[in-house]
Length: 540
Image (spheres, rainbow, N blue to C red):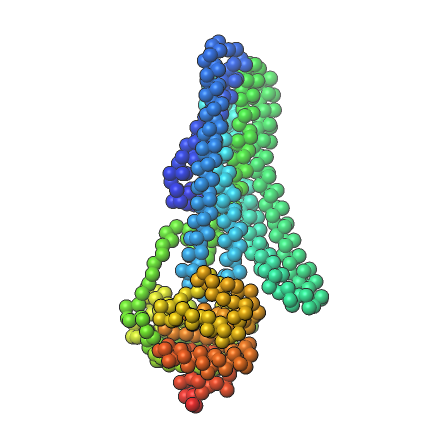
């Protein structure tokens, strides 16, 4: 039902045309079988009529089949496109903390689950055509012999019951295999991202291959085999039950003589044409279960496939210049998987004034990054709240609040084709920054973006800073930007970039350990074990 609903929501017109074309194709197939069967029994009474009838059916059958395939191809590709865009939109609109916890599941969802859905949809015209053919043949079989048809329905009914009993088992293996694939995908990512570490340690490399990748991949393989076996049993159950029914029927007719053997032969010939489409339809039930698992997997992350709309939130207060940030009794707790405990930040009471340079310091695990994400609106306070120019930040204006910031973390992504140039900055400002950070020999501004992002880690981080500055945001947050930079670039960052941002009226928040440059800040905030323990005015 979920699939049908989504098909109709995507393109009702294409879906209806594809379905009706499949039905007509099935009717043409049924009429062809009926015509040939009657001709074999009675001969050709009117050659012209027979030739016209068969000719029209032979033309209509492939024509409507092609029309159905064409419409479904358009529908399928539209669905794939919509799924990618809508899921991406939903992910970007979802709560950051929820996405952060499940980010290892996102790429498999955007690839594997979408592929599963589109593969099943591609089978839809054949299934509709086959079922239409079966319905037409059933009507013809009733006309031939109501008694034999009644027996046939009993056989198909038993088949349906057995198949229904097996479907939960199929869904179980499909779900388990899908969940295991998430784990395999994580290990495959580790092969690429951890290749340096794995290449430097043979024991680590082979332990990873044997205990992690191979083991999980083997488990996923076993589950997929079980899924395939059950799916195959479903597909072949119709064949087996029909053949079993034929044997019983022949034995019954032979002993009771309730119908003539000649009629039995004609009836069985027609019934054999129902085997293939019914077998395909039964196998399609496996696809339906796979789709259910895919859709459930998507919705488990809080991502619905319908109703995706773009909505720009704005703050009620003036947002074209930095405002006063007030954190009032905010707390945030998250579960630490590695240490098997919880980390509590806060309660935090803090004011960050417009055009102020604030440094946040503290030891590892003190809560600096958590506080920064709380300030950015990425994490939502579990108690207390944040105000911006006296306006409380809620779900209705949170995105507008986030728009005031530009943040750089150690793992921030660099969009090479999305360099946002502010009208308030000269066009050559980015080139000057690129030259100042000594990456002008490798990078230039081209077609509204960077010519390349294939740089060293330090160079990429400097390019992230240039991209952030060009956005001309009201508030900048830097999470230990200078930690892995050479001394000369630290000097540029602290002595030139930060003062220049302050001069242009920006608010700057920087997480740092560089005590040598504390004099660049208006205020230094210290955190210890999630608590604000010290305010210290920086010495100039």
